[in-house]
Length: 315
Length: 312
Image (tube, rainbow over all chains, first blue to last red; front, top):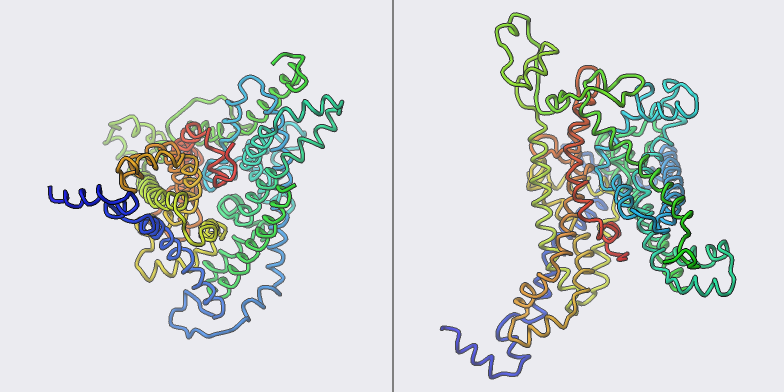
């Protein structure tokens, strides 16, 4: 054996040195293991981010490669922040965010609370309820346009059947007053199970001894709910809201397939608006500034929120 | 627990809870059942009013999904009698099958890009997660947060420079480009989830192996990897589902060769608008694997969707 000398040396030396002789040091392994991931993320995330920042100060347009690229300073940013259309887009996004999160929290918590009563078959039904959130939003969103068809759609038929209105008298995705709700309904259908699962984990983490102690003190069920259940689940609920907030701020696939931002621009959420600017009007520099503003907004809001979340956890 | 327990729900409460939850589950399942049913309807049944719950099942949607068809003259049809059952189906509309549709290719693109990118991100993610879990790495928390933060950017915002980069490198509409992109996007999820799983494996196992004369590397693949197998498998399924469902990058960066199924399915059109039975057939085939995976994953579901933040 050619390496017997090494092995003998290894056996003769104390363990620490022996390990180094027989293989790479821990520190070398650590770097070899981490480096490819960091490198890939730098190449595919950070490098493009820096490029976007650079583009955001120019008037570059992808569809005019020969035009002279001018340095325009902060003009793109200034135009975006004073643009009325973009504020409308922000309002549409805020409406979408507020109602999806409110509905998902209420329904999701209620479902988790009911499932936690531990009836027979609860695991099976939980798995069934979870299914929508795992599916492709684009494919499912596209099919919902079929369910929303004025006369032949299942949604309109069911609503018409229970409310007595004519199913062909309203169009969820064609009317300015209904379209913002059409996207809220589908998102809630899809993502309520997410909030439910997190709440369920929260409810199951509460030790029964707390309730037993409360029972000894003759606390009413109502009081137990508000002083034990709600505060103990709150950190979980806030985490769910954080995830839904970030995800829905980025929302693109589901809504673009459902309404495409229409009718007019009533459901044009920021990501859809950004896609228009960047890939339809090809205002690359302007869209880059827009992207940076969105990123800073998500990042800033998320950081503030995480601080609040940590405070709740500490209590 | 007995009915007299102060904590457990009473029998009536359980019944009421059960009924409400089952009612919600049934309502939430309706759109999905409707997709499956529409796939087996004829085009006229699919758009019937009132919506048909009972109908005569047909494979027309599936045939239309996988084929392209052309209309032919009566003489031609008389001269060429249908050879197979699927040719017979399209004959009803005086059509013949002209060739395969693009769905098969798009579906295979989803499979190739999904599986290769999943393998790569789980491979890189396992290495990084092990290092983050076991070694002292300077700025460890900052690096972990950096990895997570890459997931906060809206895909459309990242897509602008990626679009330019891919064009410069010749990666637009290629499998390699999409695999690279999905690997990077999934890497943050893989590292965070796997670090959680590896943290749960006691260090003592490796230390024992090291004392027995294993090198650090041997200890990693002979002791840690087998212990982490379940965690690695569920991480892989989460990555696969993400790559499978992804739409924003796919629609902006691919158009033909490397286009995956999600941007393709909504573009299936027939006479006068979308061919809903064919769309539903495509959706059924495309969504079914995810349903199976979700059922397999149900124990680790919560962990996967929260990046390991909630472990139950």
